[in-house]
Amino acid sequence: MNIIEIENLNHRFSNGTLGIKGVNLSIQEGEFIVIGGQNGSGKTTLLKHLNGLLLPDSGTVRVAGFPVSQNLKKARQIVGMVFQDADSQIVGETVYDDVAFGPENLCLDRNEVKRRVSSALNAVGLAALAEQRSYLLSGGEKRRLAIAGVLAMAPKVIVFDEPFSNLDYPGVSQVLQQVLSLYRAGHTILVATHELDKIIAHADRLIIMKDGSVAREGVPERVLNGIEAFGVREPCDCWMGKAVRSWQT
Amino acid sequence: MADLTAFSYRPGNTLLHRMDVRFKILFLVLISLSSLKATPSALLVLTLVLTAVMFDARFPVRRVIKEIRYFIVLLLMVFLARGLTTPGSSLIQLKFLSFTREGVYGGAMVCWRLTVVVMIGLLFVLSTRSSEIKAAVEWFLMPFPFLKGKRVATMMSLVIRFMPLILFQAKETADAQRARGVENRKNPLYRLNKFTMPLIRRVFEKADKLAVAMEARCYTENRTDPGLFSAPRDWIALFAVICLCVIVFKI
Image (cartoon, rainbow over all chains, first blue to last red):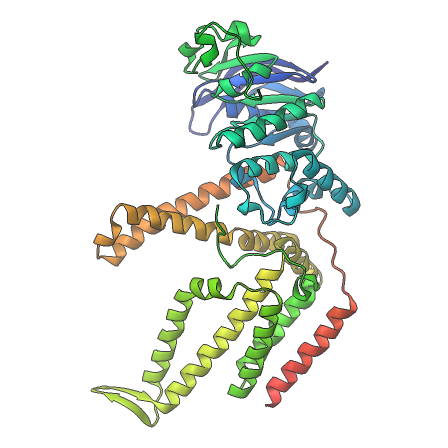
């Protein structure tokens, strides 16, 4: 079953620049998709249409069967988004407060909020830091906090925008492990990144964007060949003719 | 990232942390108002009580003194202005300038009162989550249907929440400019212009990103707020604060 269906999506920014041009995509429930492309290729703009942060000028985006523009609240509950800049995403003073922000916006009762916060913090391994001030966390912990904030809203699809930017190696490992455990738990995962090395070994499908359009799409092994023409660095293993290895090993 | 500033909520389980935020706001108003008419001995009582509460709340005293250094400069200026402009018996005479006994007394009292108000404000911010402040402001504005309580409360809580980040941003901007030798420029207007414009731009950019992130998490004004519950300790504390204010008025 397709959880996301995008038909002939076009979006133009207020300054007249074309952000998305005629994108058609279908994403199945439980799929792991990596969206690659150089800066300004339209990755983030596309992702922001999935939960109605941007609305199409023409075309439709359907999530779980309904058009996103018809029920923004439901779309944002189903499609959780983890932003590139974790600092800007964190609104709570403590780790607990930040994770509770989403469930509180859904007007859940206090006991349910508590239950969801505790379950989300356990899932990302931050339960011991619940009373810590959120801005004192390390880069990797902040990214995991942002994931917990999204998890507490019980989404089916989780969208990551450049999840590895500004992270050191342990930070990348922590976030990657988190992404993979969410995938194994049955979530549909979309990751927008230009650092394919770190994640591509786990993807079911790779989509390459250029100038707001889908330039290539398919299983990673086929799409990766000659990918540098689209401004994305080919993983090192491909140069040596090997299969791409996971960063988890 | 290091601790941004001492002027932000510090999690804890002290008496002050556990008190109902509505009572804390009431105490803030009562003590601030009573300090306006306080005599030196009354101010001494207030200062001693507040210092005791600060130690109980594990207040980062050294860091706060370091961070309020500009406020101390402001107090010094107020003190000098009062000392030099109040007529009375001269204490020190410097050519045309006369430092009067009445001016020194008046200046010291104004500075002391301002310090007491700042101490109470810091104790409040240090021990109270912004979500609790939001809930309490909404509660206080409930009797005024023409005021959009939820909106006012949200704006207040966001300002309190993001003040440390704005201060951090200001520090980063200042450091970046010092690294490029801004101190060699002696014109304060030039330096102010070069400092404020990028700072304001960065703060607005951050605010924009924050608004999008809040929207993505279904932000609404009608949300589950923290519960406001008063306990016997809050009423006992209210009685104690009223007694303190009466003592301050009577001394």
